[in-house]
Image (cartoon, helix red, strand yellow):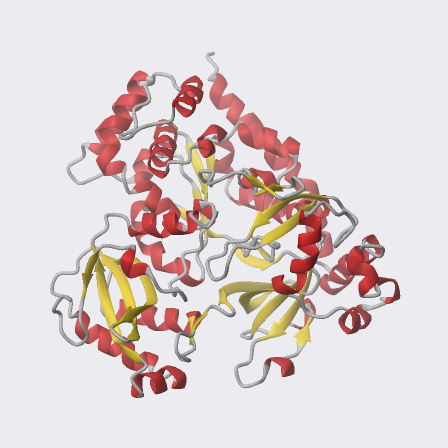
Length: 569
């Protein structure tokens, strides 16, 4: 009997990867029996570990005996509060925020603020793993087809390798850095796309190379990415490049439609080989009269894990159409600073109870922020929204990450949470105070009402003559005959339900809402390139619908429509 060595190897390393996640999964089950006890145990451990740090001595960790002491002695913090400590760590000083050595700094997403450097320690990585491993084990257990094929985990092109003044590395290589060295060894053997691809700084070459390896992999069974727009942007050029891609798969060559750095081209050669059979299969799919489906191209594809909350949902319909019949899993809330929730118990996102110490500030617009109560995990209430305070092994203490969650229910004693949006992502050019959650709700209702199949939407305050006007940048599958002037007027009226926006409109500080019809083939590429310039990885960029900073009129190409009439400025 002939044995397919490659298939046997993939099954073997998938099984090892799954089995390695089980011990942490059992611990997660045990710790979830009494969430409050688990959480207070984490706090106790972090306080004891960091008693003699600069931060611990300044805030009297040695006198903290209970949670109440912790609240009294340690204030709520944010990045500005901790910046002086992080500067000391960056200059080479040890024992500042943690007794653990800082392994690297990871830049935060920075889509709403300037990029921040979050210190990563061994303790923090262990905390991430205590959340990620149960998610992985549950995912394999519920989807056994994942054991029999290769996976694509988000790989982003390296923007620029940096280090702090004392030589501390800035930035993870890729998502596999969250795992232990042994787990990374297993992952490397089930990845469809080799690590070397991340060394490609040219976005076009990066896309071509990634597509080359993905299309060559018939047994692709799992895709794990963050932003749905990243995957859509990656797949967009397939229609244009498929002949070149099929040719390269057939002959084992490498011929992107642009210039390639010689060193990268040389490095990629060892991963190339001829596959005439796969090339023939792909060509038959691409030449179908009714069009091709990625579900047919990857017949073993079983699951796609992706952000599905807040602004990410605007791109999901297009993703569903490209992958008919494929299961989708909503990712939990995993921020640069920490892991908040994981998909577990049939895909419900529950609190990562055994990772960091979590506090929750009730979000109540009828109260002043100083009046909002802080509660622990066992005091959360269904239907209420909360902002999160993190205390982690990386040296964040009562750190407000400004992510807002809503409690959707409970599984056993674990809260089921949904990410709602970013606290503080407020556009306030002239005092209008437009909140991202408010804007997303209105735009979402408008898109549904007028059945606009939007590929890309961005709302931004843009300068118009002597005042600002909120501009809706949009690209739809069809824009002919759409009365955008009427829709803009309706959006403007809905925005006016915000008293501050209404007042700014009445006194002439703000103009009416306008539409900008995008002509760029892939607007998301321009969006990604903008944040690439801020040293953010493409796969980590959150697709926020509201930009609080203007300037997009100069970045996008298209037609700006005047208010109340479809004439072009």
